[in-house]
Image (cartoon, rainbow, N blue to C red; front, side):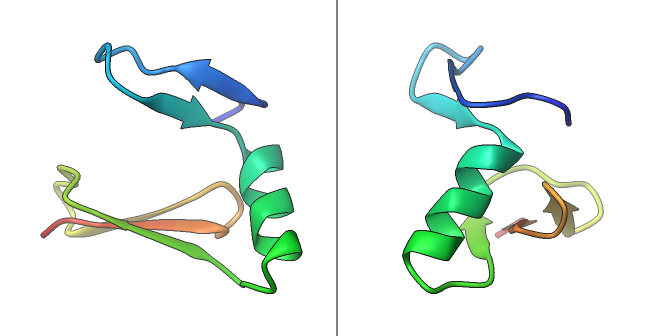
Length: 58
């Protein structure tokens, strides 16, 4: 995913964020990753944005 910054979600609710936002958020908050759930991921989980974000299907 090559998006940067913030964007409007194509679903019409919420926002998308790029790797730059995820990295800055993790750095500012002393975190190593953002964990997301309740998203459809056929493989069960998906690493994104240089492993700054993981999505877990639940």
